[in-house]
Image (cartoon, rainbow, N blue to C red; front, top):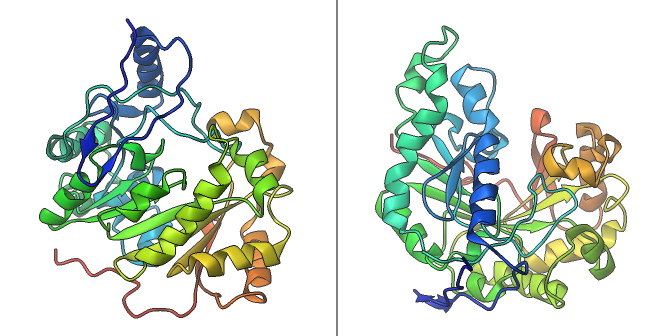
Length: 338
């Protein structure tokens, strides 16, 4: 049974024509979903899923927390990590832990229904921790009280036709959202309902390097990404903005001036320089030697400092990530009411 592509107008933009794998069959997609479930994903819709972040589990055992807690105040044990586009990404990045299997959006998941399902499914995924004597009981009692949604995980979430509706619903519930895009859909960025914080992924120094690392399906992918970079600059007065640079030793750790110039063009509030991690499907493309130590990440950031207006303001050693900004803004740490 072939899956039809829905070109549905939702909110302010339309799902564009997307290139899918040939001869798509519904049984193939169902098989892909089962494979992801074995990897710890739990589906909450046709194309949406949650997965427990390792830092959520570690936080429950008082074994540390995510760098987003240190940098921005996001409480790891009350963070819900999800994707609303498990079925599609327009890139096949060499460093991605996910195998790319692209399938059309058919039945579009309802944002309110998704948000209602997340606490229950997150609890089920964490249920095995309940009897652990090392668990922080106060945190355990709060795990169903999700206060933040990390809309990233896998896929290109801006292709979800109801992304604006989802962000608005999160705001209505008085919660925060971080949205990550790879920059393949600038039209959606330009009309995006501002989340609490918007991320643009970056991992290349120029067009040639971009094609080598990201392996995009669109011929004009580099221009799309540059338009997304400009869109990030234009939205910075409406929301907090971040460029997350994935540092891959031997592939994109040179040409600091080019990288710094792109950072300045995007003009984000924050830049995260984070080492590639050798896990998942990326092990077929890269090696452990492509990972950087925190010292190497720090040294790279110092080279960037010399060439632009951004300075190192924080770091999280376990995640091998350094935070940069033009200044350490007093509003950097988000204040939660509960």
